[in-house]
Length: 165
Image (cartoon, rainbow, N blue to C red):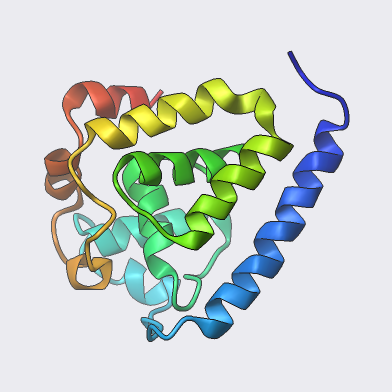
């Protein structure tokens, strides 16, 4: 069942994402990577970094300072950047064992405001739970590894076929 005011609810979540991310990044003590999309695209084509650069370039993005790993999660899981996919990505990370106050807030508010997609969220949670752990890696240190090999250590062929649908 599609609930009324879907567009308005998505705009509310987008606004919440924006402002909470600004606050989160302001107080986060982690250092930014200091790497641009153009620099990622200069890496060899087989690398995680190059694939990350392609994803960012395709969407017209640069890495978000201090939360660059989030963009790597998009690459690894195949989730896009729509509101529903952002929430599903967080469910996938939760299923994979990631626990942060920000993630929990996204799950609670995303589920309350956009419950229409609960079946997608449950699938994402199950995907994360079934995959090998990926949420804890220092992705900056992995930018030069072979993307396909790395991704295949996290997801099975069956999981990858689900992701690529």
